[in-house]
Length: 344
Image 1 (cartoon, one colour):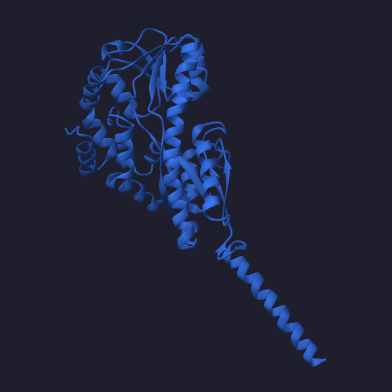
Image 2 (cartoon, one colour):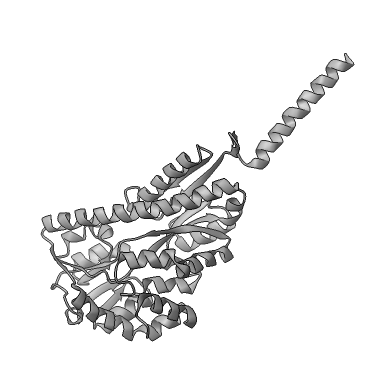
């Protein structure tokens, strides 16, 4: 009887130890890797390119990890109430697992991120991607560690374009007197003010009605936003100006990243890099489709030539002293300008 009782207690202890081990590991065992599940938040709707990229990222991670890492994507800012600043804080605190958010919003926490969106900083997307993947981009994304966040990498966003209801824009003078909605950000305000534009900062939710009522003449956004918000219903002209860049930071809570095995950490990093290329290709194809669609809706489209674009570059350069103040790091600002060949 005593022997039977001893065997029973031994078995019971073994079960308890296994259960305890599962709790500590944070998930079920899957081969040699522990099973973990993360939520990933994006700011845009399900059909937006960033959310589609996040879903593709989740798929690639699952395949590469043989199912040991599961990522559940939540769109439209639902996990953080649509407040991007709160999202960054929640990610650092661990109440959010993963987050994809624009570099311009991270500038609220690290001013050097403002450098990415300096108007006409980058000549084209190839130069932009080289910057993000180079030493300066690495320095920037490394800075989010101070917020309790590990930056897995960057994804690109489409450059921003200008629409209006007055006239085609081929030179800075065409912007003079134009009432243009811009985000409430000095990067936008200073640049367009330098071209004589009447800048009107307002929430994006108010833009369509303001255009419809003609209280403003135009606005600027990536092509995907212009089509999804149906700007073509209230705008006659689209200029492919490529005047400003922005990227996505793919972030994960630092403690949760550290809890993963080396192999799992490698999988997340490599998958993020892979999706950078996927997202770039997707956005390029979508841009072509968007232009065809807008033309079909009667929008008159013109694309700035390199010579025309240079005139706008000079407008931006005049605002460099203000942009330098926003970046709040003279040495970093100088390195960025040197990289793109636009030194002061």
